[in-house]
Length: 134
View 1: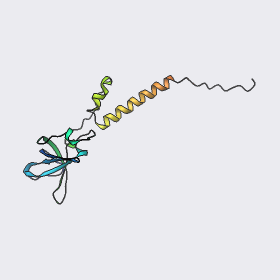
View 2 (view 1 turned 90 degrees about the horizontal axis):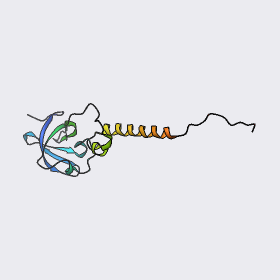
View 3 (view 1 turned 180 degrees about the vertical axis):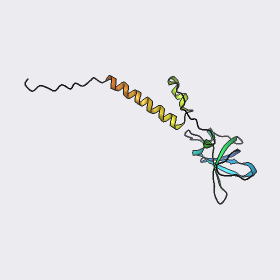
């Protein structure tokens, strides 16, 4: 059965480079998972996320006319519909497993809370005008 665009299949990591990982697909075909398609998190080193001979689920993004196959691991994973609940005492540990959207929501909430705290500390400005007859 030939590989088609949009299909999610299982493959084996055959090689790791600075720019991504090569994955062997069924029927002996090979494809490339670009570093930006490995995880929803920022990937600095491919070797931190993938190992040689590891089985991975990939989504076929494109197939060029000369047979090059572009793959994605992150798009093969199901998306979570609700944001991750945040334990405010352990924010660093939680942020490692958060998507970009969840991190952005966390940042906005934290920023708004800090702004509210600053506003509550400011003295209230009086609207009384200075008298000129003094």
